[in-house]
Structure formats: structure tokens, C-alpha cells
Length: 121
Length: 121
Image (cartoon, rainbow over all chains, first blue to last red; front, side, top):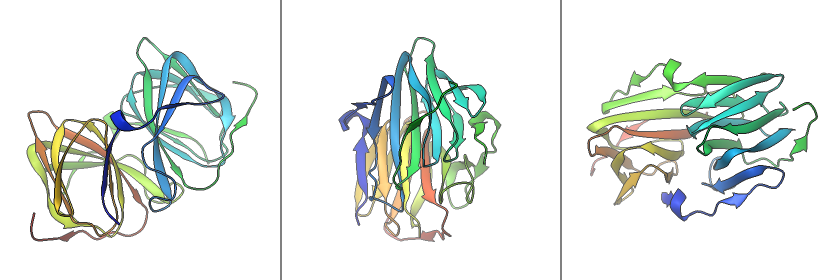
């Protein structure tokens, strides 16, 4: 297999259904590597995702901006350099704060996932 | 399992033996998640890593700065927003260019790894 170089400038950024002002970019693809892949999310100021849970864990790194994030029953503030680990099944939500877009990387296993909305956000 | 929030400000940044002006920070740990974990590398201007290969693949995202990177027999230039996928066994090297530190995330499987230096860098 060969090494690959890509740039966020050349990859499609697609709206996330269920989110508000939220777009997602596949940086590497499921099935391309050793069982995990990378996505980048961009949330416009005031945008975000409602409370939900996934069937796969998330390992995230905040690139830019600031957000309130719900993790289980807690609400935390994250910014560039924050590292968030959300095990499978833990309810979570995002709301971009401030005046610049909130951007983060989210690494997930290649396993099938289903998003389930959860009350209480 | 509970969600975890960390910050790069609070995590140790440790020199990488074999590298020059290169430090590594574990963002999540092996065994913590679904078979992969995240590290952050910081290379001072002029620093880098000599040509080597690993037993595990790398999925990388450039956070800051600029570098020349050897991928197999090619040399590419990477900068913030570059995505680099290096399959296991592919020889590669890094040299930080310009006047600011070169920083990138590197996601790897939890599998055991051994670094092997390779001539020709």
C-alpha cells in the first residue's frame, strides 16, 4: 500500500443532517487503514449537534474556536488543544460559542454506527 | 466507561529518542479505547526524524507549521490542514521547515511497534 497526501482544501465538506450549521469532512476513509478513520467537523457560531449517542467511541482534538459540550450529565467548555474521549453509548452534544467557527477532529473505529437522539440536552 | 476531557496544556511532552528537536505527547493512551490512540508531535524549526519505518500505520493531521516529509521515494511539503496516511512498513522522514514549530497529530493502532532506521533519507 502507498502513502497518501491529502489536504482539507480539496476534500468535500458535507452538511450533517440532524445538526445545525454543522458540516463533516472525511479525511481518511473507513476500510482504508487499520480499523479506524479520521473526520473533521466544522460548526458555525451558534451551530451544533443535539444530545445523542453513537455506537462507536470518539477520540477528538479541538482545532479552532470554542464550544460547550455535553458529556453524559456534565457540560464542559472546550477550545483549541482540548482532547475529548467519548466512549460508545455516552450521550453528548455540541454548541459552538463565540464568533469563530468551532472545528475538531474526530477519530472513530470503522465499525457500523447509528446516531440515536437522546432527551435531556 | 466515562467521557474524559484533557488539554495539551496539562499533558507531558517528551523528547523522542532518535529525533532532533522532536517531542511527543500522548493525548489518549493505548488500551483506553477501541484499538487506536492519538499522539501529538512537535518539531522545532530545523528538527525532525531520520528515515525510518514502523510496524503500525500512521494517520496524521498537520496542526501548525510546515515540513518536508519523505514518503517512500517521494518528498512532499505539508502544512496546516494536510492529511498524511502512512501504511505500516513504508519508509518516511520529517524535517521542520520555516521559522515556527511543526506540529501534527498522529493516530496509530494500539498494536506493538518497533522503529527501524532505513538508509537513503
